[in-house]
Each structure stands twice: as structure tokens, then as C-alpha cells.
Image (tube, rainbow, N blue to C red):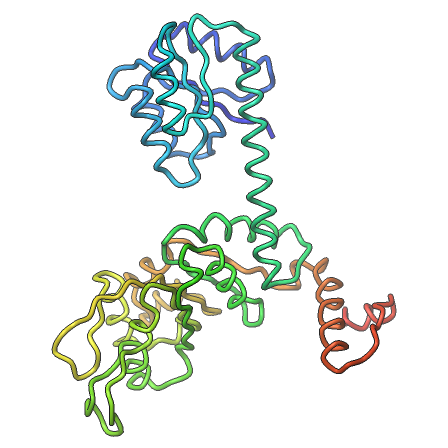
Length: 351
């Protein structure tokens, strides 16, 4: 696939020259008349790999464009085009995150050298990110399939972002393992990681378990408990089987997500919490929303990012890898000598 470059310059002649030069070098080129138009294009699909921006432009100049692009998640890299004698601005731009720069009037060979070097770095960063994501996920899941490799890359990108993630997939596909990989890729990795199965308790007990309760709030509450949200504060809370949560609890969960505070059962005050929430379900939540069994506002609050875990039948190339993993694990557990995975044995695994 061709790399996609966005050229932002208020000079139509410069845009025309750079477009021809880069297209002749095998790149896909788009144009923006200034920094504001460039920012609007970056909100759209398909993504841009590299931005070439003039330093001086009306409305949004090159430095402001660089600042605003650098603040975006998964931002493309930026090369600035500077006028002769603007080296001081170029140095400042590099400190702000510009990948490189070249001067106007520019030499064709210099431009191509800068762009080729930049795209090489972009490809290398993307490959490192992909491999890092696969290594991270391999600690939890065993796979060789492209579909799981794509999931690993998404985990590596989403993990560091402090956003709510909804993990979907059939029972047994490894949603909890994906949650563990997200936690490891997060800045909260060294903080509390608390898991709660929303289907395990009655609504009354689930409320007390999640949000806490005061002493004497109900029969058997002989002492106060902070609840899982407060226990996980500063870290991560996984709500497994979130589709089974009762409607009254859904309203209270929505309030926690919106306001960042919990009110324990029997308390007349709320407590602030700082928790990253991950949610997992094998249910079709849009269908449950349509049936009135799941709050639509909570659904959209949970699915800031959605990760779909593919079932094993859609990635049969992973079966042999899984068979080898479990064979080695259980022979070690039962102190048996290694057992080779012969074709006949693998055929049994495929039945």
C-alpha cells in the first residue's frame, strides 16, 4: 500500500511542485491550503502517514499545526518547510516533535531524501509497535494468526490511552486475557487490577460489592466495606459479563463513569474514585439495548473503544499453537517427559 502524504501550504505553486515530485516517487499525495484545512483532513479517513507543512500560513501556521497534531492519538509525523534563515524556528519545531525539515527554495534531491528517511522511520515505528503489541498479548494469549496480530496492535495502541474499553466475543475466546494485556500496556500497570463478574451475585449484593456499604446498611453488614471501585482507585476495574448487570445497577454504574465518584449503600455522601474501567461481554449489547434490557447511554459510555476477540473457528491456524502450549503446560504440571505434537495427535485436536 502506498504511503499517504498531506502537503499543507498556502502557496498553490509549492503544493503543485511537491505533489508532482512525491507522486513520481510512488506516494499518494493530498493537499491542504493551510493548517486549519490540514487539521480538518486529519479528522477523516483514510489516515495520513506524513504531513509536510509550511511554517508560515494564515489561520493556523505550521508551528500551531505541529502542536495540535502532536496532541492527537496515533498522530502522523510532521516535516516542516521553512524559509531561508528560519533555522531558529526549525530547531524549536524539532523540540516540539517535528521529525525533520527542509528549506525553501528547496532542492529536489533534498526533499526526496528527507521524505524517504521520514517514511522509513514511520514504517519502523509501526513495525516496532506491532511487535510490541504481539509480545504483550503473547503473555496472555497463544496465537499465530493475522487476526490476533491485528488485535495485538490495537491493544498496544489503546492500552496507554486512559479510555474505557468494551471487549466483546463469544464465551471462551479469551476476553479476560485481552483485558490483562490492556492493563500491562497501561500507565496503571503497577496499580490495582480488580475483576468483578457481574453475573455472579444478586443485584443487591452486586451493588454493595461494587460501590461499598456502610455498617448496618443491610442485614449481615456488620462492618463497612469500601467496595471494588474504591479498592481499584488509581488502577483498573474489569466488569466481566457486563451485559448481565441489572438495570438499576446500570444507572448507578453510569453515574460513576460520568462523575468519577461512588456512593456506598447506606451512606449519605459520595467518594471520588479514579478508575479505568474495562468491560467484557459475550452478549449482543445493541440487541439488549433494543430490547430495553441494557441502557443505551451506558452502552455508548462503555464502548469508547471496542475490541472484538475472534472465535477459534475463524483462526484455525492457532489450533496447533494452542495444542503445543497446553501439551507442554500439562506435561510439566504432571512431571511427565515432553510429548511431541505428532500429526496424528494434532488431528485429534482438530476433531
